[in-house]
Image (cartoon, rainbow, N blue to C red):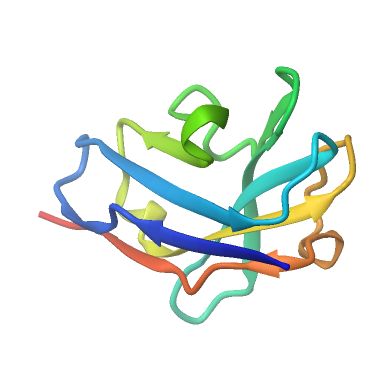
Amino acid sequence: QVQLVESGGGLVQPGGSLRLSCAVSGRTFSSTTMGWFRRAPGKEREFVAAVTWVGVRTSYADSVKGRFTIFRDNAQNTVYLQMNSLKPEDTAVYYCAARSGIATSTSSAAYDYWGQGTPVTVSS
């Protein structure tokens, strides 16, 4: 069993930055892949970014490429999402997710464990 706890969400002005954290506990393996998803008001949940637990493979949604960076600290069992140049359309609840597999996936169905979510609001 894997437990995920997100933090770091909040209110930020357009153009600002936030860093989300996802603390991972329980059983993790070298083949675990971590992802971030988000759900905006009235919209479906969508993929944001993913990173393999071991190695340096990452993937990003086109809408965040160049602005968001996903990275992990294995010693701290934490995955981060650094969000820069935030836009109002980035407003959503952001979820951390984990899956068993060495490949990143953009499909929420591929992930086995989910956090409770942390809200991000981008507004002036």
